[in-house]
Image 1 (cartoon, rainbow, N blue to C red):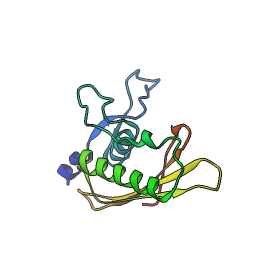
Image 2: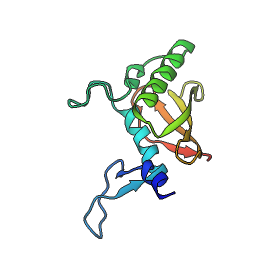
Image 3: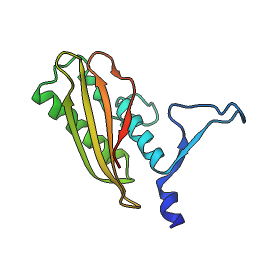
Image 4: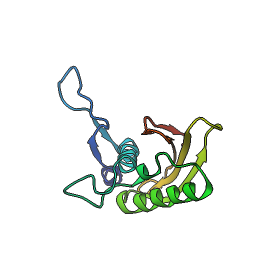
Length: 142
């Protein structure tokens, strides 16, 4: 069982935060590390990392797009491709892009997946603002 938990990983909290008591960076682990890795994949544009130019997802290409059917399908495909390539700790990935209220300039990216090592189902919702991109994210369900 300890091996399964190690597979889930451990890394720096995203965004980086310093513990005021110890002065060290706060770490994150297990399912939280996966959620933060997904957020990082979505927020990183392809070509943005010099040492890993293929890393990321070109979701920023959809800023200023109208949330029509074609744009939503393209976003879903881009996200699914990036997650399948860059996050090996998850399976059964589902991506759905839904419009917010009419005229509010936001679409909601719903991502569902199963953690491979323990079969935990997880659902995430990322609000994506069509004028500015990502600002925050939240987790729903489990």
